[in-house]
Image 1: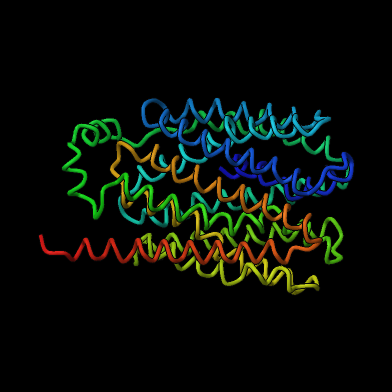
Image 2: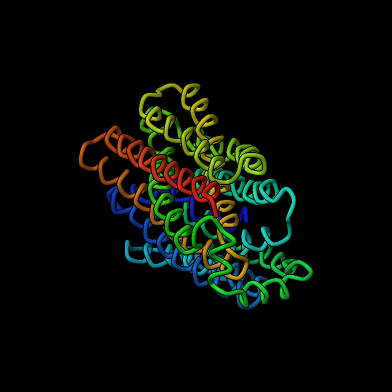
Length: 385
């Protein structure tokens, strides 16, 4: 999961060398991330369906091959349309195969401490999202962006593909899935505080605004730090600090969800993220930016863990892969919108103030939607039969 998710986020460190070499605007370059994020979201539904119906191992194996090939292709790009196409391949057929299927698979293995288990799995994801861009930054500084993409592609094909052979479903999974699929819609509706499809829609809409908030920072934090005077290596460390801190945040909020429930854990992590996002444009020294990166990363880390746990708590087993895929599609739509609007409003205004203000507004809308979901769920649970 770490290496499956990391390459998509390398846009943050490839941003400056690509715009410098090809003369692309920041908005149109960030659109490549939006395209890849949308492809990953759509691919996540397909891969979730395939993992629900067939073998998670096969999905992961094929996805790692696509991921490695897409990275090698990125090392050869010469035009903007190729950048969009290769990013769509990476997101839609590569990263999506390692995101939804593996998270759904991990959730099937645990009944006790399921929040902690998912938190640990997504913590590995966070490390990859931090370390892969960080190491890519050093590779770019050492030998250029083309060699960096080539190295990432070769590592994926040589070292990561064999790991797919270790993936398997838990004992008794097939029987449990068959029983879940055989249950009637009325039984499922009775077993959950609101109809599963309604729950997925509600969580998915919230995730758009939540991830639009975080996507602004994920795509533009390094460029913002460079604008503040940090060199390429120090600026790349910002995204690393966010994800290292996010490693602990994912574990913390995953375990917290075991005690207070997924919805409340998700709301608390979203609140911290929203409260801190605008401060990125107020920080100017390296110490200030690093401290903010650590604080923001801790809360940001709990968000995707919370989303995954909410889906698990509110949907039946037979549709959990597809449900996770739908929510992640909308989450990646939000991530893409956040990254794109960050570049667009920078191009329009010459600064990131409007971009991060928009991110704050998106975060506030998410908090209202999740708060309303929690109130509705609690009322349904306490309503007399």
